[in-house]
Amino acid sequence: MLPWSRGGKEISQVPSGAAVYACEGGKPLYVRYASDGKSATVIRPDREYRLDRVAAAASERYSNGRDNLAIADGELRLEEGSGALTLCKADKAK
Image (cartoon, rainbow, N blue to C red; front, top):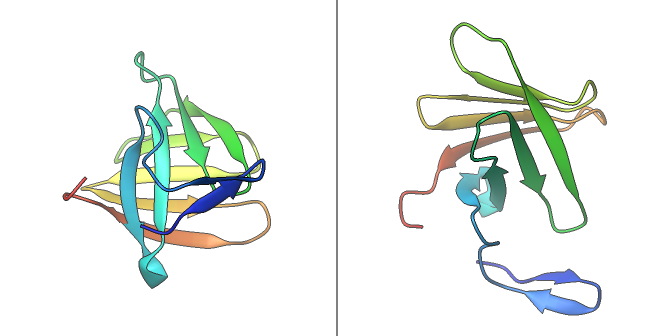
């Protein structure tokens, strides 16, 4: 796992309570789900942001109106407002 730098301090471990996903290019993505399932926090090297659960028939979906996260069958699809699309799979090793 690659270390991240946050506030001048390197972070090389999984954030507390976060699920780990292995994404394209070998990059990890961390998502912390609220215990009540009503929200998820996406944890990136440069920022964290909250997404609220939205109704969906075939998958778990979270959104903040700009960014969207869908999880189905252990695969995660993150679409960010900038147009970036990240495809990931649950990291079973973590």
